[in-house]
Image (cartoon, rainbow, N blue to C red; front, side):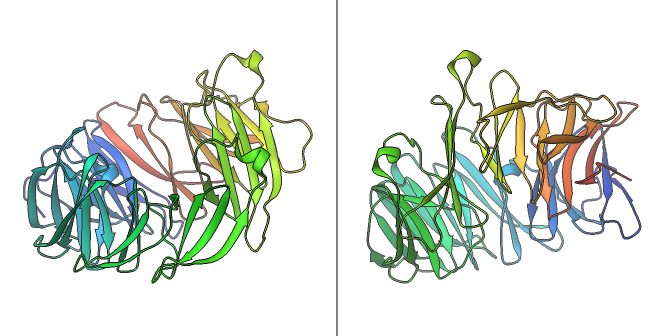
Length: 399
């Protein structure tokens, strides 16, 4: 741990799983959960690692050049951090996951994205002239390089990297050898942890389950053609074998059950009325039997499976009178967490359970932690420090 690290302190509740990290000067940002560790940018130049369960500070890295905490991935024993990143180029630093010590650095290049693939890290870009490189996670050594006209999407299943290059193809993450080419469409579930033997795709009005080792279709579910024409972007996979479509400008939301079915079953189909004079500000989310959407007018709407009211606006006032005008939201296990930069709150079953001060942190999205906690940023009461709270999802209680 660097000798000149900023003074970080932790307050933790005994056995509750709640804790608060404090850093000087309001310099915390972008918490990212990787496994059992929360990573956060400290003092705009370091990465701090905190045990997600007990709140123990594991390490704080040396100074890095403009680290991008939201782009962190972990491959075996290495935490990979994008640094000095802009719209065209990025560098990368590999940190030891146990100590935070720098293992390797890569200079800036057009490779801007990172994905963990076992003992390898795949660096790539999604622009014309799509470059991709396999890197040894422990040493940063280049294992292989390739280039395609464009890489529209990428996901990892086990040691296999699956690309959408206007057609699906799979590469071995360690060697770069092409394993197969098979099929067209959009890759679903990018960035999620999933069954290494399977992946999902959307195309031509069908959602397919494919085999990772061959790309062959194992199961196919078709969607009504008259509906597909209006669905817009590819869907998001949600719990319970369902998929969620949302159109920002079309202000339309559709939820379908598809798993184990030859033909999808519509569960929710709603649209925000034209008289609202707004559109969705981000993709809708689904929690349980409800879908939620935020608008550019900082309002939250909800619709329920089997409900007849369509999208209805939620009045986000907590029992203590505090209110939230949501700019950001995130779906947890049973809750939707919302933030407006001044306040953070949790919604369950269509009502705001609690609201807490974020004290001027600009609309940072809360981060669900497991099934019963949530991470959010705030400022200390004396405004001399930045706080990262790990709070109870149901009550908002902190230490």
